[in-house]
Image 1 (cartoon, rainbow, N blue to C red):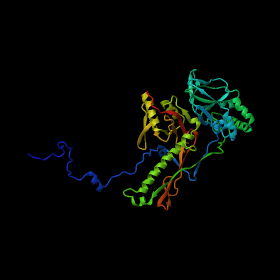
Image 2 (image 1 turned 45 degrees about the vertical axis):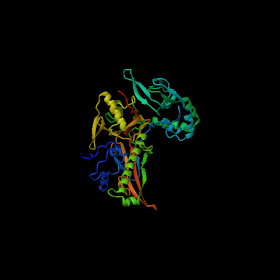
Image 3 (image 1 turned 180 degrees about the vertical axis):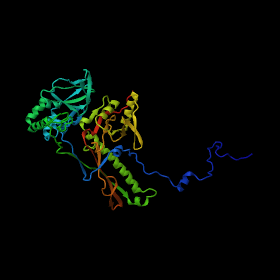
Length: 475
């Protein structure tokens, strides 16, 4: 009888024995193999559609001046608040966003004025202002949504506008004696409003010569002939017959046009000489360090073009071009209203989650949005206008964001990007990499700089749909 034991079969009362190795193991073989490796990867890189679609204008002198036709009407802005618990206090300097106080120089008067506002709460459905009632107070919304109601052709109630955080109403009473509310204001949500009695405002004006002068200059602007956009009127005549005496005209310009200076994003990249000398095969270490650094700078550039306080599109959009959603989520009605606010809308920009919310609302209504081909790619579209994803648009409190619509190009009086090409050590348009030397610790330094800005040529070039609710809604 054979006594040979089968390999791998447990011996009686013992454990399984490992089979005898008959070939080279993979762990040892890898020591002699060449590893195939990827270039360094980076999750931060996004499509950066804004940088790709903006027309870029060369700014040789480092600044771009936007000359406009003279405007008599003063634009509205948004008042800001300092919130402590349930209390909301107006930041005095932001009262300059109220048209009558635009450019007012006396901070002490603004501080006193802010202190005279009284806070009160309102609930959904409450009527804050009734049409036809005398205007006796200015209201500034600290939190919440208010619907402005008008009367339709046949007497029916119609929502003609929505107001939200930072909006204000009632200051139009300064332009009319014994003025009455032309509309009704009803709360769409619960919230907080701060009110100032016009009598208190007038009492302060009686004590401040500077404020009296400010009000006089403000009212004088409305006495000047102007078009519906507030621009100085140009005398014209049409439909006349015979030897009619034609009006004379000239086009006046703003005396202090806005200038946009190129902004900069910079960093200093450091690479040790030992790394640069010894570890450059098969990939150049310095080259890949610079590549990823440049990608990060371009990401920051797009973020600044959206969010920068001085020139960012989201922060500098005109107040009259900001609209609120009708019910919270971005409905087809909201998208149509945003699109209709300007001629020749070239593109929408929205956070990817906002685009998903648009899709949900379309699904609920059985609608099928467009797809638009852009640079060889199919993208989501609305009425033939591409809706580009942009993760630089902020999401507030986890569930609200904004959607931008814009017209682009100098010829279209739209939005343009600003840069300067031909700078020293340029590696990409308006981006340079400059050698800064080697330190005593054998570290090579490179200064990486990107120069850029953006300009809105006329106010209606950019529109913003605000307070877009992107939380999931069950249909």
